Length: 232
Image 1 (tube, rainbow, N blue to C red):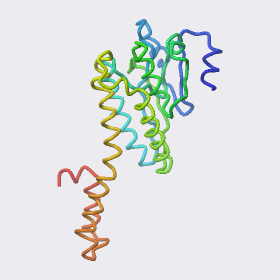
Image 2: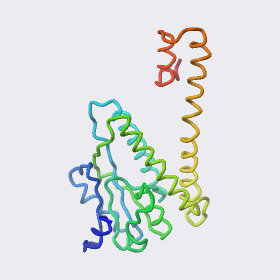
Image 3: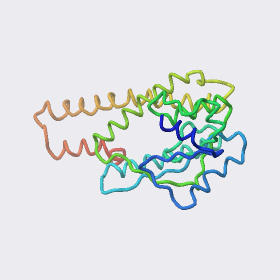
Image 4: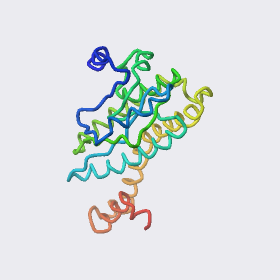
């Protein structure tokens, strides 16, 4: 594929990947290669921000990405980063050791981290390497992206199930990988369950009494989908 062709043509010891919809901030190229001073570092991921637009969906995605990279920052402290970003650097010899870009899953960045981990390499995060990326601005685009991510993560979890509670990989095997399994199951179960409660209570307390739409109905749904409901 194109990535492996680029890798073959490259002569550098470090290969940097950048998504087409991602912009690199000043000095980030210099900063992202610094962790390679450690010989066991096989990849370095950057901190990525969402480019804000006038679409409300991107506001939520900004919070989501800030939370995710906060999590990555914590994982960096225990050598257990599970996924790279749209802006990442790889040691060429590390990529060669796992057969280059494999293209076996829908979330290749996640898959690469797992293969590098099995080969004994460390994946680092460099907070001083910063990039900004575009995210879906429509619900249709967002759903398509999340369905691809969900399918890809399932592929990765199945392919690398031997990492689960694997003593050899310490924090990654005992904490990070089990956490990913939990959150995947949580995402599959949580949405249908919450939808059941939301619609069930709506029919029970409003619709069956003839109150299909009113101020109280609007307040009910508002409380479900905002922080105000937690304080109510």
